[in-house]
Image (cartoon, rainbow, N blue to C red; front, side, top):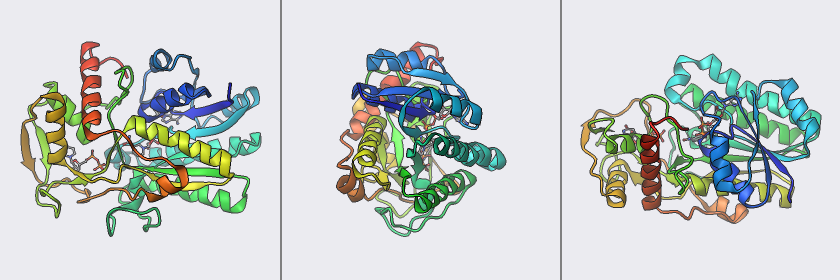
Length: 341
Ligand code: NAD
Ligand code: UDP
């Protein structure tokens, strides 16, 4: 049996898939989550897929005493820090809350790790730190800038973690910049739980397919892209989860930190994603073209060389698999009365 990984935010979308992949490769997993955006039954669902049950602690990453107790009672090899708030729109309404939760939470976690002498961290960053990119594909060396309080909170965390490594080389931090995670576990036991009407494209498409909305609102068809609609780098959440294992191995083997994009490197337009969804599921998605959504960039996709050269990781799963798995998850949620997370 290998050692233990602490996953903050481990009942959420990406953390739960990463917990499964870690346990399937022999790691013990402790999940710490305050359940502000997930349900506790995700633990049973992870267990049903992963063959063992993660140890679950209901709590907040800003609770220093709880963190000290956790580090004192377990031998933890590394922390994967997913816990955070992620809605761009909400971050404009609740800017102070986003700072407190995302930046304050990360600072509190890092301080507890320092007290415990655990200095390996895999951090959930985002392509949002590139803001409006000058060129695509976007390399890790591209200028960092943000366009909203959520993005700023991620960039502040990155800055804090870069400083930490520069000041004390015992710290090994993987800053992983996710592009557009979609899909769900093939078992349809875990997936994304959007709150209210989804802002993101894939969950909106699956809800249109399920009849919850009459049509997909396409935000702009006059961008300088292949068909005028916005282009993004959609990545299957299981591929993304496996990227975390690759980053963990890098920290353990190389003994130093890394910054890496986790994307496929392929740009896909809104209309291309809709076509792939129909091809994968047989469900037609009615569309209505609307104005551009304020703050959207035309095109955003990853340069993937760094992830391949350093981590030996690249995304494997197709757009078809992303669509089919997202749809299977939506159907399973509908069957369960949309009650599970
Ligand atoms: P999610 O909301 O599904 O999961 C986050 C989890 O963290 C939730 O279960 C929530 O209850 C928990 N949490 C939040 N604040 C907490 C706190 N203070 N203490 C303990 N638990 C807390 O989101 P996700 O999509 O799985 O995203 C995970 C991480 O990846 C986030 O940091 C997010 O910003 C980042 N990210 C996500 C995306 C995306 O599109 N999903 C893209 C880029 C980056
Ligand atoms: N989009 C859309 N309709 C929606 C949601 C999104 O046309 O209901 C478009 C959006 O304008 C962008 C792309 O889909 O071009 C991806 O949007 P999403 O919010 O999923 O990701 P982000 O823009 O945050 O990368």
